[in-house]
Structures are given as C-alpha cells and as structure tokens.
Length: 287
Image (tube, rainbow, N blue to C red; front, side, top):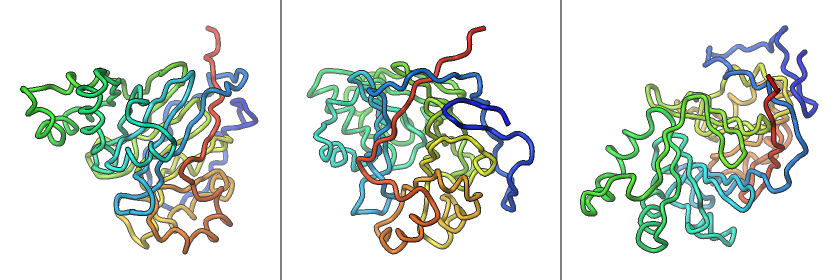
C-alpha cells in the first residue's frame, strides 16, 4: 500500500474484483500531494441533489466556498431556488464550472449571464473544460444570449478554457476525469483537493471500484431499474463494500424515500441539499 495522506491508501496490488464493463482508467495519481492543516474556510456545499425530472429537489449542483468566494459547479434551471434556500443570489457567484452540457446543468447560465451583465455590471468567471464551449454556446446559449447586439459568450462571462487535467481556483485543486455518460459527449467529474470525488452524471467507474483511499465520493444514482446514461442503485451495489461506505448518492428522483433505508444501510447515505464536506488543502511535494 502507498500512503497518500489523511489516513488514506491506494492499493496498487490485488485490485478489487470487478465483474462489470471495463470503464475509463483511473485519472493521474494524486499521491504527489501532502496534507497541510485543514482550512476551515474551504468546503464543498451540496446545493442541489435532484435529477432532471425532480420537482422536490433542485438540479444537481455544488458550491466550493473559500476565503469568501464561491465557485458554482453546474448551473441548472433551478439554480435561483437552490441559492435562495442558502440566503444567496446570483450576485454571490464568483465563478462557474460546467461538467457537461445538459439542461439541468447549464440552463441557469442564461439567467446568471443576463443578471450579471445588466443588473450587477459584472462578468463571473466561466471555466470550461475541453469540448464544452462549442456545445454550450453554439448549440445552447447563442440563440437567446447572442441575439443581444450580436453578443458573445465573453460579453457575459470572463471565459477561461482549462486543460483536461484540471485547474486551481483560489487555492483549491480541481482535477478532472472523464465520466461515462452520453457516448461521444464531453463530460467530466472532479477530484477536489484529493479529498472529494464528484462523479457528476456517470455510469459506474471501474477505477472507483479499485480505489483504496479515504476520499469522500458523491455519486450519480438513478433510482430507475435501468438507465443507459446514469448509474443505477443496483449497479452501485457492485462497488466493493469499503467503497460504498464512502459514497453519498445524489442526482436522484422524487421517490428517494422509498430507497432511503437501503441506501443508508449500504452506503454513506443520501446526499442532502445544504450538506457540507470539508476540503483540507493539499500542497505538492517539493522537487
């Protein structure tokens, strides 16, 4: 075993048995990070846990909060309700990262862009991973936002293209990995400070089945018996028990209460809107 800090280990021999399909390999190892003292001001807040059809829960989304600033991860059509429940508005968002282009993850960007430009006189930072920009602007937002005096995406946002390996934001390290969602569609999950793994929308990932760290996992979970582009509860049960005990299920439907007892018995639990997860900071090894 190789220690990676915070009591976690990645086991590179004797991998966990996996009887499912072969999924993308594990992203670049993060064992070159060492822990520093936890920063109380840095945390991940889950602000939406619902799937695209849910009416009792807001669209799946997150806030990274650190040093008084907020990075929004995904911005679906219920974003104003999610922020309202926290006593926040769109004016409190400093930056946005989009995991993939689907309505429940991006349709709130139009409102954020309009209010930021015309009400608040500001341009929030918009961080775009490879392949996201063409779908986001040309296929989705341009039809309404581009009609304003031939406006560009950059007229609403301070757009920054980030690499496929990830980026740093306000001292928080965000590593990207490809997810298994819609074939041939750019879609990303996040490893945040090597402490939290957010799968966004994805089928189960083989490298997670092999993971022996103590990282918290927030995992997509469809409650349907079959779903071609989201992990189902039965599929998540195929993760080894030590992995399941670190999994908080999210992106679920309004029928979640029928499954809560089973989830709380087999997994870390059902992710809740407003739930926070600390983000201890990591620093790279010298040399």
